[in-house]
Length: 120
Image 1: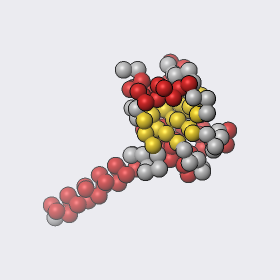
Image 2: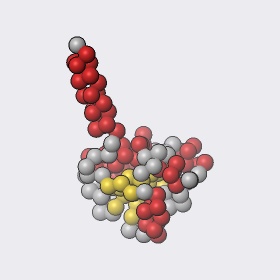
Image 3: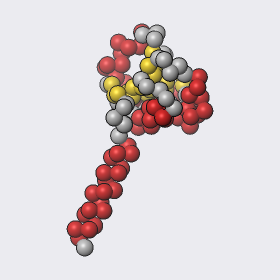
Image 4: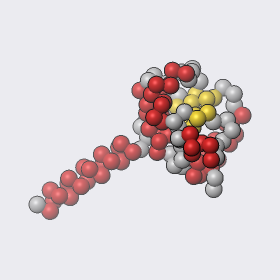
């Protein structure tokens, strides 16, 4: 019985990790790697935090498009340009990358650590 319990726990842990980590098709960059990209006009910068979080502090080049509205507003973005996505910690932006990938975007980048890393 103890073995069965450990197996169930292992499977649940594996499922959790698979759900929370970015997919294979999603590239991740650090905030240090982001800095030189901010002047690149060929990229789209999206901040998926809430409006309140965005108003408190944000990176000038990033447009606010909260995760809750991304599904319906994704068509305002160009599928021909790379999309770089940030949130507070990197979790919502990873989910946003998955949403965009499912909508046919082929070049999406998650900023690992999000604004927490940027502000350090």
